[in-house]
Length: 329
Image (cartoon, rainbow, N blue to C red; front, side, top):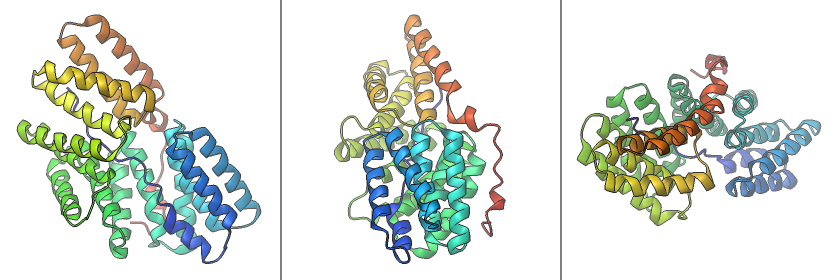
Protein backbone atom coordinates (compact mmCIF):
# COMPACT_ATOMS: atom_id res chain seq x y z
CA UNK A 1 0.00 0.00 0.00
CA UNK A 2 1.46 3.34 -1.04
CA UNK A 3 0.53 5.87 1.60
CA UNK A 4 -0.19 9.38 0.41
CA UNK A 5 0.79 12.72 1.84
CA UNK A 6 -0.19 16.15 0.65
CA UNK A 7 1.85 18.94 -0.80
CA UNK A 8 0.06 22.28 -0.54
CA UNK A 9 -1.16 23.87 -3.72
CA UNK A 10 1.32 26.18 -5.40
CA UNK A 11 1.63 29.51 -3.61
CA UNK A 12 1.78 32.38 -6.07
CA UNK A 13 2.78 35.09 -3.54
CA UNK A 14 1.76 37.90 -5.82
CA UNK A 15 1.89 40.91 -3.49
CA UNK A 16 5.63 41.17 -2.62
CA UNK A 17 6.74 40.91 -6.25
CA UNK A 18 4.20 43.49 -7.42
CA UNK A 19 5.16 45.83 -4.62
CA UNK A 20 8.77 45.59 -5.76
CA UNK A 21 7.69 46.53 -9.28
CA UNK A 22 5.49 49.41 -8.15
CA UNK A 23 8.41 51.13 -6.49
CA UNK A 24 9.98 51.75 -9.87
CA UNK A 25 7.46 51.05 -12.61
CA UNK A 26 4.08 52.26 -11.34
CA UNK A 27 2.42 50.15 -14.04
CA UNK A 28 -1.23 49.62 -13.17
CA UNK A 29 -1.88 47.74 -16.41
CA UNK A 30 0.66 45.05 -15.47
CA UNK A 31 -0.93 44.68 -12.06
CA UNK A 32 -4.30 44.25 -13.77
CA UNK A 33 -2.86 41.41 -15.90
CA UNK A 34 -1.53 39.56 -12.87
CA UNK A 35 -4.77 40.11 -10.94
CA UNK A 36 -6.86 38.72 -13.79
CA UNK A 37 -4.47 35.78 -14.18
CA UNK A 38 -4.95 34.97 -10.49
CA UNK A 39 -8.72 34.96 -10.96
CA UNK A 40 -8.43 32.59 -13.93
CA UNK A 41 -6.00 30.37 -11.97
CA UNK A 42 -8.45 30.10 -9.07
CA UNK A 43 -11.20 29.28 -11.57
CA UNK A 44 -8.92 26.51 -12.95
CA UNK A 45 -8.90 28.10 -16.40
CA UNK A 46 -5.19 27.47 -16.77
CA UNK A 47 -5.01 27.88 -20.54
CA UNK A 48 -6.51 31.37 -20.38
CA UNK A 49 -4.31 32.33 -17.41
CA UNK A 50 -1.18 31.14 -19.25
CA UNK A 51 -2.13 33.05 -22.42
CA UNK A 52 -2.70 36.24 -20.43
CA UNK A 53 0.62 35.92 -18.61
CA UNK A 54 2.51 35.18 -21.83
CA UNK A 55 1.08 38.37 -23.33
CA UNK A 56 2.14 40.25 -20.21
CA UNK A 57 5.63 38.76 -20.46
CA UNK A 58 5.95 39.76 -24.11
CA UNK A 59 4.83 43.27 -23.28
CA UNK A 60 7.22 43.59 -20.34
CA UNK A 61 10.06 42.43 -22.60
CA UNK A 62 9.17 45.04 -25.24
CA UNK A 63 8.87 47.75 -22.57
CA UNK A 64 12.18 46.72 -20.99
CA UNK A 65 10.67 46.13 -17.55
CA UNK A 66 12.74 43.28 -16.08
CA UNK A 67 10.87 43.19 -12.74
CA UNK A 68 7.57 42.59 -14.47
CA UNK A 69 9.24 39.96 -16.64
CA UNK A 70 10.32 38.14 -13.47
CA UNK A 71 6.80 38.47 -12.02
CA UNK A 72 5.14 37.05 -15.13
CA UNK A 73 7.58 34.14 -15.27
CA UNK A 74 7.08 33.37 -11.59
CA UNK A 75 3.31 33.24 -12.05
CA UNK A 76 3.52 31.25 -15.28
CA UNK A 77 5.31 28.42 -13.49
CA UNK A 78 2.45 27.14 -11.31
CA UNK A 79 -0.12 27.92 -14.01
CA UNK A 80 1.76 25.82 -16.58
CA UNK A 81 2.26 23.05 -14.03
CA UNK A 82 -1.48 22.85 -13.40
CA UNK A 83 -1.98 22.73 -17.18
CA UNK A 84 0.35 19.70 -17.35
CA UNK A 85 3.15 21.55 -19.15
CA UNK A 86 5.88 20.52 -16.74
CA UNK A 87 9.10 21.31 -18.65
CA UNK A 88 7.71 24.75 -19.56
CA UNK A 89 6.79 25.34 -15.91
CA UNK A 90 10.30 24.36 -14.85
CA UNK A 91 11.86 26.75 -17.38
CA UNK A 92 9.63 29.66 -16.33
CA UNK A 93 10.43 29.24 -12.64
CA UNK A 94 14.14 28.76 -13.28
CA UNK A 95 14.21 31.99 -15.32
CA UNK A 96 12.24 33.86 -12.65
CA UNK A 97 14.73 32.80 -9.96
CA UNK A 98 17.69 33.92 -12.03
CA UNK A 99 16.03 37.18 -13.04
CA UNK A 100 15.16 38.15 -9.46
CA UNK A 101 18.65 37.23 -8.30
CA UNK A 102 20.20 39.52 -10.91
CA UNK A 103 17.70 42.34 -10.26
CA UNK A 104 17.50 42.41 -6.46
CA UNK A 105 20.24 40.13 -5.13
CA UNK A 106 20.36 36.60 -3.72
CA UNK A 107 18.40 37.37 -0.54
CA UNK A 108 15.41 39.26 -1.92
CA UNK A 109 12.03 38.13 -0.58
CA UNK A 110 10.71 37.99 -4.14
CA UNK A 111 12.76 34.80 -4.61
CA UNK A 112 10.68 32.87 -2.06
CA UNK A 113 7.73 32.24 -4.38
CA UNK A 114 9.60 30.84 -7.42
CA UNK A 115 11.96 28.85 -5.17
CA UNK A 116 9.00 27.28 -3.39
CA UNK A 117 7.04 26.61 -6.55
CA UNK A 118 10.01 24.98 -8.30
CA UNK A 119 10.64 22.96 -5.16
CA UNK A 120 7.03 21.79 -5.16
CA UNK A 121 7.29 20.87 -8.84
CA UNK A 122 10.33 18.69 -8.16
CA UNK A 123 8.61 17.09 -5.15
CA UNK A 124 5.65 16.15 -7.30
CA UNK A 125 8.06 14.84 -9.93
CA UNK A 126 9.59 12.48 -7.32
CA UNK A 127 12.85 14.45 -7.12
CA UNK A 128 12.93 15.27 -3.38
CA UNK A 129 16.65 16.03 -3.17
CA UNK A 130 16.21 18.90 -5.65
CA UNK A 131 13.12 20.04 -3.80
CA UNK A 132 14.96 20.00 -0.47
CA UNK A 133 17.68 22.35 -1.68
CA UNK A 134 15.22 24.87 -3.12
CA UNK A 135 12.87 24.81 -0.13
CA UNK A 136 15.73 25.17 2.34
CA UNK A 137 16.87 28.24 0.42
CA UNK A 138 13.35 29.70 0.43
CA UNK A 139 13.02 29.12 4.18
CA UNK A 140 16.35 30.82 4.81
CA UNK A 141 15.21 33.95 2.96
CA UNK A 142 11.76 33.94 4.55
CA UNK A 143 13.26 33.47 8.00
CA UNK A 144 15.36 36.61 7.65
CA UNK A 145 12.32 38.63 6.60
CA UNK A 146 9.99 37.27 9.28
CA UNK A 147 7.00 38.42 7.26
CA UNK A 148 4.50 35.60 7.15
CA UNK A 149 4.01 32.71 9.63
CA UNK A 150 1.49 31.07 7.30
CA UNK A 151 4.01 31.06 4.46
CA UNK A 152 6.71 29.67 6.77
CA UNK A 153 4.32 26.91 7.82
CA UNK A 154 3.73 25.90 4.20
CA UNK A 155 7.44 26.00 3.43
CA UNK A 156 8.19 23.82 6.45
CA UNK A 157 5.48 21.37 5.43
CA UNK A 158 6.84 21.13 1.91
CA UNK A 159 10.35 20.58 3.24
CA UNK A 160 9.01 17.94 5.61
CA UNK A 161 7.39 16.20 2.66
CA UNK A 162 10.73 16.19 0.84
CA UNK A 163 12.35 14.56 3.88
CA UNK A 164 9.50 12.03 4.02
CA UNK A 165 10.05 11.13 0.37
CA UNK A 166 13.74 10.58 1.16
CA UNK A 167 12.74 8.29 4.07
CA UNK A 168 14.23 10.70 6.60
CA UNK A 169 11.20 10.41 8.83
CA UNK A 170 12.82 11.87 11.97
CA UNK A 171 13.59 15.08 10.10
CA UNK A 172 10.13 15.07 8.51
CA UNK A 173 8.46 14.85 11.92
CA UNK A 174 10.78 17.46 13.42
CA UNK A 175 10.00 19.88 10.58
CA UNK A 176 6.27 19.20 10.87
CA UNK A 177 6.38 19.96 14.60
CA UNK A 178 8.05 23.30 13.83
CA UNK A 179 5.15 24.03 11.47
CA UNK A 180 2.69 23.13 14.25
CA UNK A 181 4.33 25.70 16.52
CA UNK A 182 3.65 28.34 13.88
CA UNK A 183 0.02 27.26 13.57
CA UNK A 184 -0.45 27.57 17.33
CA UNK A 185 0.44 31.26 17.02
CA UNK A 186 -2.06 31.95 14.22
CA UNK A 187 -5.47 33.42 14.91
CA UNK A 188 -6.98 31.36 12.09
CA UNK A 189 -4.95 28.68 10.25
CA UNK A 190 -5.36 28.73 6.48
CA UNK A 191 -6.56 25.78 4.44
CA UNK A 192 -3.05 25.30 3.06
CA UNK A 193 -1.48 25.18 6.52
CA UNK A 194 -3.59 22.11 7.33
CA UNK A 195 -1.29 20.08 5.07
CA UNK A 196 1.02 19.59 8.05
CA UNK A 197 -1.58 17.26 9.61
CA UNK A 198 -1.46 15.06 6.52
CA UNK A 199 2.34 14.96 6.74
CA UNK A 200 2.20 13.92 10.41
CA UNK A 201 -0.37 11.28 9.49
CA UNK A 202 1.98 9.90 6.85
CA UNK A 203 4.94 9.76 9.26
CA UNK A 204 2.86 8.04 11.95
CA UNK A 205 1.45 5.56 9.43
CA UNK A 206 4.86 4.51 8.19
CA UNK A 207 6.14 4.01 11.74
CA UNK A 208 3.12 1.85 12.60
CA UNK A 209 1.40 4.39 14.87
CA UNK A 210 -1.95 3.88 13.18
CA UNK A 211 -4.15 5.45 15.86
CA UNK A 212 -2.05 8.63 15.76
CA UNK A 213 -2.11 8.60 11.97
CA UNK A 214 -5.91 8.38 11.92
CA UNK A 215 -6.19 11.23 14.42
CA UNK A 216 -3.99 13.56 12.35
CA UNK A 217 -5.72 12.67 9.09
CA UNK A 218 -9.17 13.10 10.61
CA UNK A 219 -8.12 16.52 11.84
CA UNK A 220 -6.91 17.48 8.37
CA UNK A 221 -10.22 16.41 6.79
CA UNK A 222 -12.34 18.15 9.43
CA UNK A 223 -10.51 21.47 9.08
CA UNK A 224 -10.59 21.40 5.31
CA UNK A 225 -14.28 20.62 5.22
CA UNK A 226 -14.87 23.64 7.45
CA UNK A 227 -12.69 25.97 5.36
CA UNK A 228 -13.14 24.87 1.72
CA UNK A 229 -15.88 24.21 -0.84
CA UNK A 230 -17.03 20.60 -0.90
CA UNK A 231 -15.47 19.98 -4.33
CA UNK A 232 -12.02 21.33 -3.50
CA UNK A 233 -9.19 18.88 -4.38
CA UNK A 234 -7.62 19.37 -0.97
CA UNK A 235 -10.65 17.71 0.61
CA UNK A 236 -10.21 14.84 -1.84
CA UNK A 237 -6.57 14.58 -0.75
CA UNK A 238 -7.61 14.14 2.88
CA UNK A 239 -10.26 11.61 1.92
CA UNK A 240 -7.70 9.69 -0.13
CA UNK A 241 -5.26 9.59 2.78
CA UNK A 242 -7.89 8.20 5.14
CA UNK A 243 -9.09 5.71 2.52
CA UNK A 244 -5.54 4.40 2.18
CA UNK A 245 -5.23 4.07 5.95
CA UNK A 246 -8.53 2.21 6.32
CA UNK A 247 -7.75 -0.07 3.37
CA UNK A 248 -4.40 -0.95 4.90
CA UNK A 249 -5.98 -1.68 8.30
CA UNK A 250 -8.71 -3.90 6.78
CA UNK A 251 -11.65 -1.56 7.36
CA UNK A 252 -13.30 -1.69 3.91
CA UNK A 253 -16.60 -0.30 5.18
CA UNK A 254 -14.80 2.94 6.05
CA UNK A 255 -12.41 2.95 3.09
CA UNK A 256 -14.90 2.50 0.23
CA UNK A 257 -17.04 5.64 0.71
CA UNK A 258 -13.89 7.73 1.02
CA UNK A 259 -12.34 6.25 -2.12
CA UNK A 260 -15.59 6.89 -3.99
CA UNK A 261 -16.02 10.47 -2.80
CA UNK A 262 -12.38 11.37 -3.46
CA UNK A 263 -12.60 9.90 -6.96
CA UNK A 264 -15.67 12.01 -7.78
CA UNK A 265 -13.86 15.20 -6.74
CA UNK A 266 -10.66 14.36 -8.61
CA UNK A 267 -12.60 13.59 -11.79
CA UNK A 268 -14.12 17.07 -11.86
CA UNK A 269 -11.55 19.25 -10.09
CA UNK A 270 -8.18 17.62 -10.85
CA UNK A 271 -5.23 18.13 -8.50
CA UNK A 272 -1.61 17.07 -8.03
CA UNK A 273 -0.86 14.56 -10.80
CA UNK A 274 1.39 12.33 -8.67
CA UNK A 275 -1.06 12.33 -5.80
CA UNK A 276 -3.94 11.36 -8.09
CA UNK A 277 -1.86 8.63 -9.71
CA UNK A 278 -1.02 7.15 -6.31
CA UNK A 279 -4.63 7.51 -5.23
CA UNK A 280 -5.91 5.43 -8.15
CA UNK A 281 -3.17 2.89 -7.57
CA UNK A 282 -4.31 2.54 -3.94
CA UNK A 283 -7.93 2.38 -5.11
CA UNK A 284 -7.05 -0.42 -7.55
CA UNK A 285 -5.29 -2.34 -4.76
CA UNK A 286 -8.37 -1.94 -2.59
CA UNK A 287 -10.74 -3.18 -5.29
CA UNK A 288 -8.47 -6.15 -5.96
CA UNK A 289 -8.27 -6.99 -2.26
CA UNK A 290 -12.05 -6.83 -1.90
CA UNK A 291 -12.65 -9.12 -4.90
CA UNK A 292 -13.62 -6.54 -7.55
CA UNK A 293 -11.11 -7.57 -10.20
CA UNK A 294 -12.79 -5.83 -13.14
CA UNK A 295 -12.87 -2.50 -11.33
CA UNK A 296 -9.25 -3.02 -10.26
CA UNK A 297 -8.15 -3.54 -13.88
CA UNK A 298 -9.97 -0.40 -14.99
CA UNK A 299 -8.30 1.65 -12.27
CA UNK A 300 -4.88 0.17 -13.09
CA UNK A 301 -5.29 1.23 -16.73
CA UNK A 302 -6.05 4.73 -15.53
CA UNK A 303 -2.84 4.71 -13.47
CA UNK A 304 -0.82 3.65 -16.53
CA UNK A 305 -2.35 6.47 -18.59
CA UNK A 306 -1.65 9.05 -15.88
CA UNK A 307 1.96 7.92 -15.64
CA UNK A 308 2.64 8.65 -19.31
CA UNK A 309 1.66 12.31 -18.84
CA UNK A 310 3.08 12.82 -15.33
CA UNK A 311 5.57 15.42 -14.16
CA UNK A 312 7.91 12.60 -13.10
CA UNK A 313 8.04 11.34 -16.67
CA UNK A 314 8.30 14.79 -18.23
CA UNK A 315 11.12 16.00 -15.97
CA UNK A 316 12.99 12.75 -15.37
CA UNK A 317 15.74 13.48 -17.92
CA UNK A 318 15.97 17.22 -17.42
CA UNK A 319 18.97 18.37 -15.41
CA UNK A 320 18.77 21.72 -13.66
CA UNK A 321 21.90 22.73 -11.75
CA UNK A 322 20.50 24.46 -8.69
CA UNK A 323 24.00 25.56 -7.68
CA UNK A 324 23.99 27.79 -10.74
CA UNK A 325 21.65 30.18 -8.93
CA UNK A 326 24.04 32.94 -7.95
CA UNK A 327 25.01 32.70 -4.27
CA UNK A 328 22.08 30.37 -3.63
CA UNK A 329 23.79 27.83 -1.42
